[in-house]
Length: 111
Image 1 (cartoon, rainbow, N blue to C red):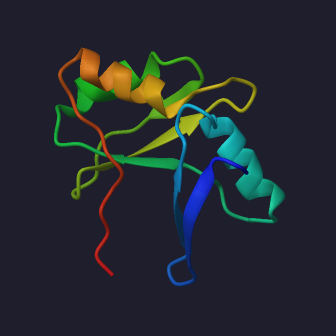
Image 2 (cartoon, rainbow, N blue to C red):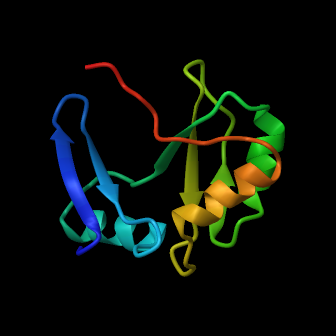
Protein backbone atom coordinates (compact mmCIF):
# COMPACT_ATOMS: atom_id res chain seq x y z
CA UNK A 1 0.00 0.00 0.00
CA UNK A 2 1.33 3.42 -0.92
CA UNK A 3 0.68 5.00 2.48
CA UNK A 4 2.48 2.31 4.52
CA UNK A 5 6.14 2.59 5.54
CA UNK A 6 8.65 1.44 8.15
CA UNK A 7 7.38 -2.14 8.39
CA UNK A 8 8.80 -4.29 11.19
CA UNK A 9 7.85 -7.97 11.35
CA UNK A 10 8.31 -10.12 14.41
CA UNK A 11 8.14 -13.94 14.40
CA UNK A 12 7.98 -14.80 18.12
CA UNK A 13 5.52 -13.72 19.28
CA UNK A 14 4.14 -13.01 15.85
CA UNK A 15 3.28 -9.44 15.00
CA UNK A 16 3.89 -6.50 12.75
CA UNK A 17 4.42 -2.84 13.45
CA UNK A 18 4.31 -0.18 10.77
CA UNK A 19 3.65 3.48 10.18
CA UNK A 20 1.01 4.69 7.77
CA UNK A 21 -0.56 7.87 6.52
CA UNK A 22 -3.75 8.01 8.63
CA UNK A 23 -5.59 10.37 6.29
CA UNK A 24 -4.86 8.15 3.29
CA UNK A 25 -5.45 4.56 4.39
CA UNK A 26 -8.48 3.28 6.29
CA UNK A 27 -8.10 0.77 9.09
CA UNK A 28 -10.16 -1.70 7.05
CA UNK A 29 -7.85 -1.33 4.02
CA UNK A 30 -4.84 -2.07 6.22
CA UNK A 31 -6.52 -5.17 7.65
CA UNK A 32 -7.48 -6.37 4.16
CA UNK A 33 -3.86 -5.93 2.99
CA UNK A 34 -2.56 -8.00 5.91
CA UNK A 35 -5.07 -10.74 5.16
CA UNK A 36 -4.33 -10.65 1.42
CA UNK A 37 -0.64 -11.20 2.19
CA UNK A 38 -1.58 -14.60 3.55
CA UNK A 39 -1.66 -13.88 7.25
CA UNK A 40 -3.50 -16.56 9.18
CA UNK A 41 -3.91 -14.23 12.12
CA UNK A 42 -6.72 -11.83 12.82
CA UNK A 43 -5.68 -8.21 12.43
CA UNK A 44 -6.64 -5.81 15.22
CA UNK A 45 -5.69 -2.31 16.14
CA UNK A 46 -3.97 -1.94 19.51
CA UNK A 47 -4.25 1.40 21.29
CA UNK A 48 -2.79 2.61 24.55
CA UNK A 49 -4.26 5.17 26.93
CA UNK A 50 -4.43 5.75 30.65
CA UNK A 51 -7.90 7.31 30.37
CA UNK A 52 -11.02 5.87 32.07
CA UNK A 53 -11.80 2.49 30.48
CA UNK A 54 -15.56 2.73 30.11
CA UNK A 55 -15.66 6.31 28.83
CA UNK A 56 -12.96 5.74 26.23
CA UNK A 57 -14.37 2.40 25.07
CA UNK A 58 -17.84 3.96 24.75
CA UNK A 59 -16.45 6.88 22.73
CA UNK A 60 -14.50 4.59 20.39
CA UNK A 61 -17.50 2.30 19.82
CA UNK A 62 -19.47 5.31 18.50
CA UNK A 63 -16.98 5.81 15.65
CA UNK A 64 -18.31 4.65 12.27
CA UNK A 65 -16.97 1.19 11.48
CA UNK A 66 -15.86 0.24 15.01
CA UNK A 67 -17.22 -3.15 15.99
CA UNK A 68 -15.80 -3.37 19.51
CA UNK A 69 -13.42 -1.45 21.75
CA UNK A 70 -12.33 -3.52 24.70
CA UNK A 71 -11.18 -2.53 28.13
CA UNK A 72 -7.49 -1.93 28.73
CA UNK A 73 -5.28 -4.74 29.97
CA UNK A 74 -2.76 -4.31 32.80
CA UNK A 75 -0.40 -2.49 30.40
CA UNK A 76 -3.11 0.00 29.37
CA UNK A 77 -3.51 -1.62 25.93
CA UNK A 78 -6.94 -2.18 24.43
CA UNK A 79 -7.95 -4.02 21.27
CA UNK A 80 -10.28 -2.41 18.76
CA UNK A 81 -12.02 -4.45 16.06
CA UNK A 82 -13.82 -3.19 12.98
CA UNK A 83 -16.64 -3.96 10.58
CA UNK A 84 -14.92 -4.78 7.29
CA UNK A 85 -17.64 -3.27 5.10
CA UNK A 86 -17.13 0.21 6.61
CA UNK A 87 -14.40 2.84 6.32
CA UNK A 88 -12.67 4.08 9.47
CA UNK A 89 -9.74 6.46 9.46
CA UNK A 90 -7.35 6.54 12.40
CA UNK A 91 -8.09 10.24 12.78
CA UNK A 92 -11.72 9.37 13.54
CA UNK A 93 -10.53 7.39 16.57
CA UNK A 94 -8.22 10.19 17.70
CA UNK A 95 -11.02 12.74 17.36
CA UNK A 96 -13.42 10.58 19.39
CA UNK A 97 -10.81 10.25 22.14
CA UNK A 98 -9.97 13.97 22.09
CA UNK A 99 -13.67 14.87 22.35
CA UNK A 100 -13.77 13.31 25.84
CA UNK A 101 -10.34 14.58 26.89
CA UNK A 102 -8.49 11.32 26.24
CA UNK A 103 -5.29 10.75 24.32
CA UNK A 104 -4.63 7.51 22.44
CA UNK A 105 -1.38 6.28 20.97
CA UNK A 106 0.30 3.20 19.61
CA UNK A 107 1.50 0.84 22.34
CA UNK A 108 5.16 0.85 23.23
CA UNK A 109 6.54 -2.67 23.55
CA UNK A 110 9.92 -3.42 25.03
CA UNK A 111 12.08 -5.73 22.94
